[in-house]
Structures are given as structure tokens and as C-alpha cells.
Amino acid sequence: MKKGYSLQVNNEQIIELPDTTNFDWRIEQDGAAIQHMYYGEETGDGVKLNITLSKSYEVRVSSADPRCYIYIK
Image 1 (cartoon, helix red, strand yellow):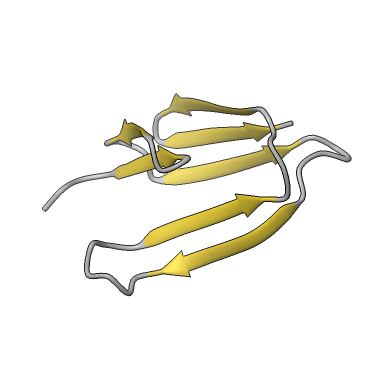
Image 2 (cartoon, helix red, strand yellow):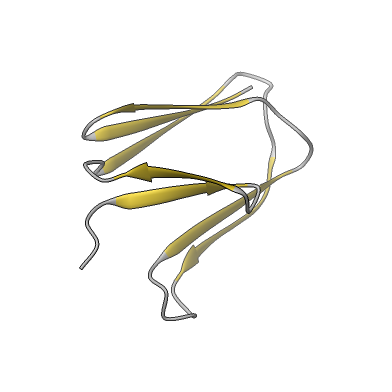
């Protein structure tokens, strides 16, 4: 069984996070508005978390195992 997580951005770039166990979302004050968030497993491909932002934002990922930081501004 595959260990850890993989993070896919815009259905293109895939970032492997094999030792990550926690995710920490940092959204700047007056920053990104989350338009839609889905967490579940319907396809048999594993659990997925899909987040749609209301418009384009700068997103930065910093992995400091075991926590992955996701910055949105």
C-alpha cells in the first residue's frame, strides 16, 4: 500500500508527500475565499480532498515532515 499523500494542483502538478501526516492551511487575512471543498472517496482511488478557490491566488506548499504547510494569498 502506498504510504503518505500526494498533492495535485490544477489537475497537473503532483507533489509527493510520503512522510506527511498533518496539513496546516495558512490563508492570509482578507485572502482567498474557498468556493467549494469536497472530502471523500467515491472512485476507489483513495480519499480525495478537492478545494476550489473563488479566483486565482498564489499558493505555496512547504513540506516540513510530518506537517505540510499550504499558504494561500
